[in-house]
Length: 240
Image (cartoon, rainbow, N blue to C red; front, side):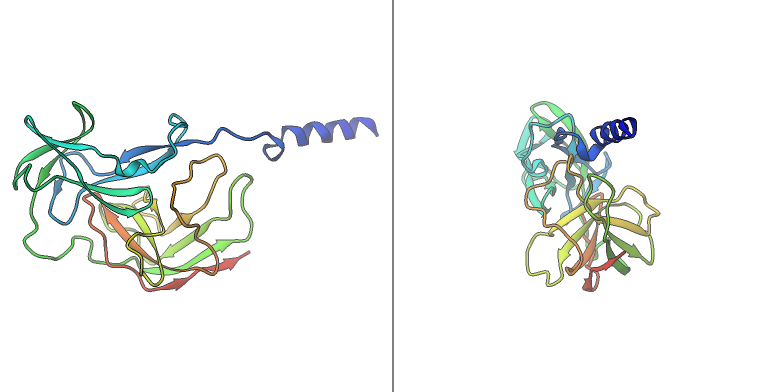
């Protein structure tokens, strides 16, 4: 009778649930725009705040840091537009560069993070003109150990070419920022986890948890910062 009890105690002590607090990640900026991209007047360089074990001391939203664009010796602070907590567009000032100019985005003095070309879109037609075609959004009732239940969007078609992120808005869309976002890593995906929390991952300040009972709309973001029209409102349901 003693040996099974000892074995059980060892197993429980070694399990992740019984382990002490994990080292929580910090946040690091990640540029989602391909280098050499042409950025028009409606877009910008897409910068996301991502969970990083190498930046544990950094807990603020690092997507909207006061970086600079440089052309030759001239510099100017980026014009920042926040799309969601942890997701922002950095655009060059109109006075710094003209159409056709190549400029460098510096994330530190004299350190080029990415080079882009300044462009101009003649019409108001967006490259991302199709809303996500949502079949359903569901939240599981159970979750893997250390992770909250996943909220998953099922789509009729994969993301448009060039998509880098998916925005999650409140259903009424009466707020300027999306409640959250998720990076699109699989260009052929028709199911995308739009919210799930691991207790060891960094949480972006301002992100609103998204789960069963919420009503949301979704929108695509491409690598040059264009945002699609939003999907229809859809209520998130719970599944077993």
